[in-house]
Image 1: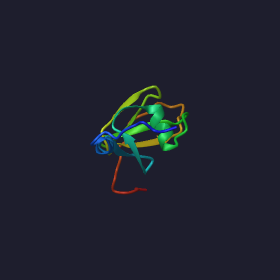
Image 2: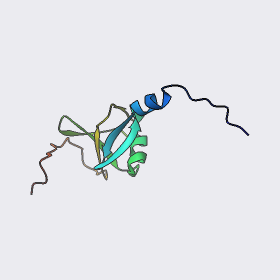
Image 3: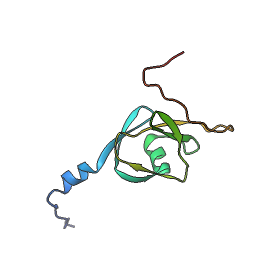
Image 4: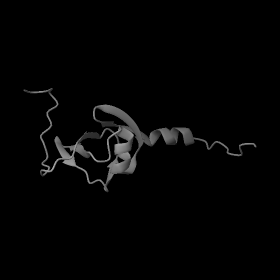
Length: 100
């Protein structure tokens, strides 16, 4: 059986332009830009579906709904942790290193 597909000029570079890097739990991951399901981000990052996924937005961790979607543009940062029974509050994120 032969492959009848033909290459579309510029398709490879267009595809590469639509693939961006995000970070999930300090690990860079590549993904297509655009609207993505939170569930798919968890799978990509190896995050258990039962865990909470939060996005770093303007220095604050913002919880994402399990059935929600996120618009990926590139360079987004996500952090996961087990869900707890308490309410979730945005946390200030300090990039200077750990403080004890």
